[in-house]
Image (cartoon, one colour):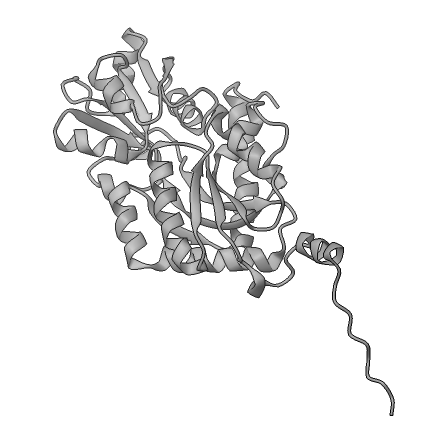
Length: 317
């Protein structure tokens, strides 16, 4: 009688090697917690936490939103770029990948990451104190030609700085930029340390409701739901169309099957009534794009940001 095939047990070395191999099938992912690097505080961090909580349910493992702020996003981007491309380290990214690169803070660009999905958009808003005499951009511009205004921004070289520079360039005025900490725009305005501030709408809505602050304009092509009464810069005669997209990306070389799993989870979250409800309260507009569509958007946006930063004298790389 012939002997059957001899079965051997894998050695410890073989098992260790297998454990190091990249994931090759989406069904094998995820097997442990996923970490989402968050680059900024304020509304970005709040939305990231809402997204992470919802994705934990979709993926069946904890998704932890971990703050790695600093240098306009350079700290977080550098960490994720150097992480293994296995889907367990993702980044809550934005247009900041382009502003931080072209301003010279990092030596790699968006191509160091694989896109996963766009989650949605935020629109910068320009606010002033409610007791000021300015009710339109034209009135603010006229006053700024008589007195150099101090404008609060959340960091030099940031996307907010870029939007501010573009807006005031179109308005034909020169201003003094005053960087402030995350989430402190209302306090800076109410304390009189700045004359105006550009920031995300949800930072202003409480004070607008209390009639302490007034929003003069938003920089999107259309008005936004959370500030429907506020006209766009374009409506007021200034050609500015700049919005912040926010999405998910992973280190370059992450297996496509893993990207597909994360993308699918994100798609279901964005489509959920609960996410839409919470987003509306935060002034965030859900706007899902698949990995391929998102990648094309990031490339187009990078070229546009590079051109704008060159035009405004902000491009260093």
